[in-house]
Length: 277
Length: 306
Image 1: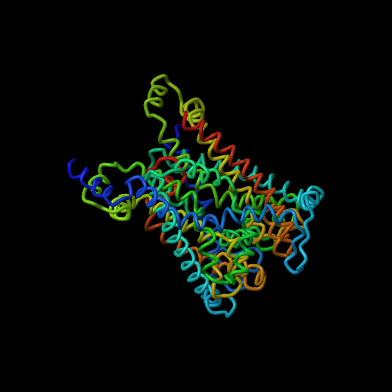
Image 2: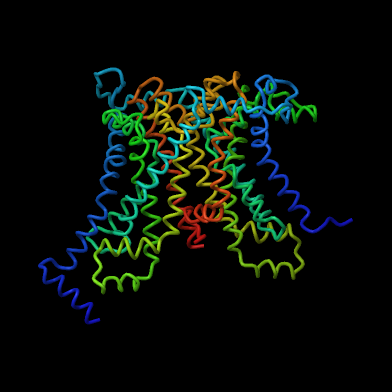
């Protein structure tokens, strides 16, 4: 007997899909259960009487306000993404398109600093936030990581690939340096800007360590921090609530992903430095 | 052309040469970035290194210089060595796992089958979740009393296992969680690598009568070597920095069997408030990660030449 064509491929794909979807589906299903139903052996895969109790609690309990965490996450990640783009794109423009003494040396030095892992800056930056009274403010979530060398590197490479004739036309028209940057280079680089934006947004949205140490109230706590606290203070008691938190917090990012999946995947490829442009 | 010369002349007539104007503009464009970079990166690295030579407790005003004592203490600190060992074991297991699963997934979704795009979208999904969500989902799946994984295993008469409570099981469990979460990135890189292999090579092999397995092991795999190298080295860099999974799922336990270096850094600096010693931990960790990154740069050069 001969197996149908691509049998093994389909088998592998279905297996991997099950591996990926199973944990998430269980979480979704159990978040509609009551606490008693979750703490039962053998575990139930589907709720006998689906209830929204858990979702209600995770959105309204005074110390676990998923809606506020989500709002904070969005503010912080958006602010951070804008800050990275605003700082990195002019710097990349200077490195890519302008001649000035020290261009290559300065860029080389910056490139070397990519090798410095961020952990080494955690303690000094934390103490700086404390001295500036920036703890528990959005400044602490937005500014310390905004000078992103990788962003400069990526944009510089992209800016360099833009044909110089386009800029020369602007020079003949008497455009200033800023106009060349703003009216010529930036509009032609939307792909790279979006890719970098997605990359830094997701990185920041999912970050845990830094937000955990610089936030301590509902007014700035981000989603990952909230979820970590949720787990440590309510494990055992409110399991469906914790699962509801995990599920709800994932929905915005998954919706955005499903809508923009092509762009996101292309962005990941581009930012990984391996083609995809 | 004549217009161009006119522009240059008019600039020159302003007294400042075009060259100087351009340099000045460049520094203005660079200034915001360099300001932030100096404050939050350059300054912080210098301060961290300096702090590591001091006894620097957040609650004590006296902060005496103690030379290399923090580093000597680190060398003799059992918890540090346990954390390092756990981190290395976890990193190796995870990198092998994400590379194998990522490669398997990439090979499968690049085959000309129906629903290719759908599978690609689904398989990348976990990578987008936050470590918070991933940790909460898996900590319950792995629960020893009511977890669904033990339930599934009970059908083949295995278990129940205390996945996160047994010293030998906790790192493999965290690793499994992380493989689920993280294989999407290697998958994308492998897809790009697979697509860059010229189709003719496969055609020639097929004409020569090679079967799919022979083609995979004698063409695909050797040509993917640079990609595999890239995936494993970047994987080591990112997974060596593991922190969220033990933080959320095990709190470092049982005992200290899931302490990792960044987890330990958190403990030292933000639980014991020993900032000087924490700085020493951070400096040593940074050196380890930096040497992995240096490896990547060396390999990356090889990749481009390839």
